[in-house]
Length: 341
Image (cartoon, rainbow, N blue to C red; front, side):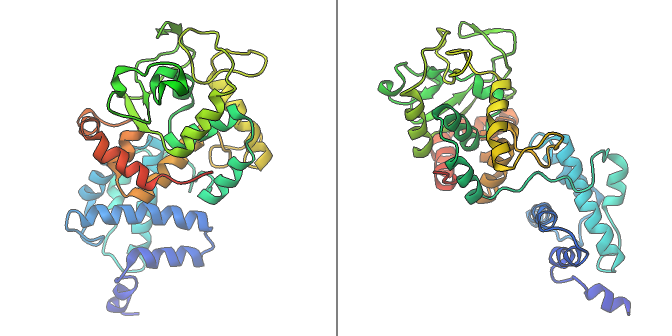
């Protein structure tokens, strides 16, 4: 085959050509979708800089990888880098590109994760069916809160009634001042730390947010909160925790261990959890944060709002969304949050 004919292979849509080839090679649909998500994201990044995939050099690749940090974990950064490296290596091999700009980049970062690690891919309809089988008011409220807010299990455990901007008749407690002017929302603070006293109670978990975040509450989550608050036991703590045990430790604030056990029990019934299964297979409380991030990011196309809601972004970004919360965060959230009930 002539060099000109080789270069024509995949020239119109290199990503599409690569995805078709890995399908022919027997890669699963989940792997195909994972590569597509990453490669199309990188392609959009280059388009924003008036570059094509063929134009990109190692500095362009490194800049994209660098901007991922702070948004995703280091293992995910390594995964994205490995996907990009394999794409360029293959397209160079078939003659579409002259060189692999990721070759040098991969010498500079630590790719220390398993090949093609991917979490279980649960579609919204499947998650809706899963939630329909979660009947207990506490379990249902815990699972839906994780799914609708993307907060961590420890952050959920630290929620007090004052952290909710709902009518006082629904909570019986006046909301904190930070929620003034932000109706139907939940405030996730950054301060609670394991073993330290916060709002008059020693906490069993730490919040890991860099900055406090205010997350909208949609009508589904509000209804589930109503159902839970109607049967919620009197809490042992004067801090008025939202989620308390209805089992052996009646009225005690939930702990991350309790939340993990709750989610694991329902995931096992669904066939989504097994002993010895890793993060790629098992559905845990942290999986719901992954589900929230993936689906909301794909629906909104607004990485900034999703990063704000996750609470793990830099000060300048979070300040921008905090100051324009009503017009930016709430509108984007309400227009794109998935329906689960």
